[in-house]
Length: 419
Ligand SMILES: Cc1cc2nc3c(=O)[nH]c(=O)nc-3n(C[C@H](O)[C@H](O)[C@H](O)COP(=O)(O)OP(=O)(O)OC[C@H]3O[C@@H](n4cnc5c(N)ncnc54)[C@H](O)[C@@H]3O)c2cc1C
Image 1 (tube, rainbow, N blue to C red):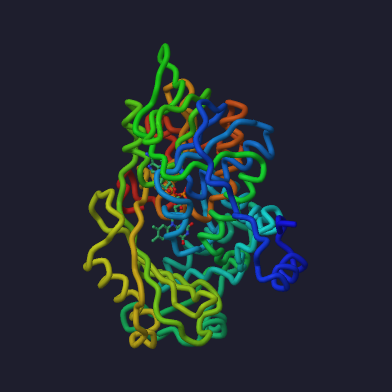
Image 2 (image 1 turned 135 degrees about the vertical axis):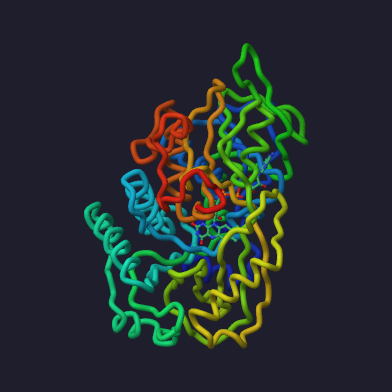
């Protein structure tokens, strides 16, 4: 008997028989001639959408088309932070829905995604920043989301090794969301792929969408490197490639692509047991279960579709780290990499129909889309199945830039590179 469901019993059974009974986590499906719904992009959002389309909305005949391999995009490149510590009414309910879904995800998928609610601590360095954090924390609490404003002593108890007395950026306290934390990123892709496959979704890898097929102005399918495939509806969930893929359908999106880099050090003994973010620059850090320090910073400033960064940002990120916790200065960086961010004009995502009948859009995640994955999948599936937005994602409209309903969490204005 093949081991289908993961449990302590299947692990023991397989241990006794040399691990010969495990089935592949998902089939490597060949594309069929036609589907009810095609999702372009096998990242976290595309796979979660496919799962909820069939599981929650009962849609059959679904394919996820991925140009590379499952987990090869941003879903496997991010720094794994999940949280719902937003301030604006458009964002808090959506990201809180996502966090609540993370809390049940492993049971739902029967997959160990290493969901770790170790706490996310945003540091503040001035009175003005403290007031802004207090305001955000109050907004969160009014929406039933946990938030605690900590003074310097409380932060010192949690993370005593920070440079509290830094001459330029003294640490005065922090805003803590205890329910925030980390989730193992590629396990999320694998868990969703496995669960969707079990329910009959075709996951087609090495299948790049190269164009769209129209009849009477409506989408009727896609052209791919594995031939044409028909579909009643097509959903785009291609993250950093959104503007390029939408352009193939004649659509110009309010999105710019930028690279974001991440870094992992050699393994060291347990050192940081929460996620810490620097409030005076762009630097965030946690420690993986293997012991490596995982950290990142700001996007590279220029537009690109290349998944590699450049040295000025490496320097900038390391400067942020040294200002915050100088004792990491002698740890060696083992790996670093880049992913392409679909930066929207207000820093918030888009989950909406497009002006082209049959074409739906999930994009604009900037560098915060990993934490959104479960809710994004659920809301996009709702839109695709019912042709109406899920209430948690209703503000994420494509036309909000024209109608003046921007959701500008950072208050940066229409400058994608600053969000
Ligand atoms: C370094 C880094 C750190 C980050 N840190 C965080 C974080 O800590 N917390 C957080 O919430 N977010 C973070 N993010 C952002 C987050 O990873 C993304 O917003 C999110 O993963 C995007 O959604 P996705 O998983 O669906 O994207 P992806 O995994 O990129 O999926 C899109 C897929 O579409 C495929 N594709 C593209 N074009 C085509 C085509 N023509 N045909 C078929 N397939 C196509 C791609 O190959 C890709 O696999 C980070 C990102 C990076 C790069």
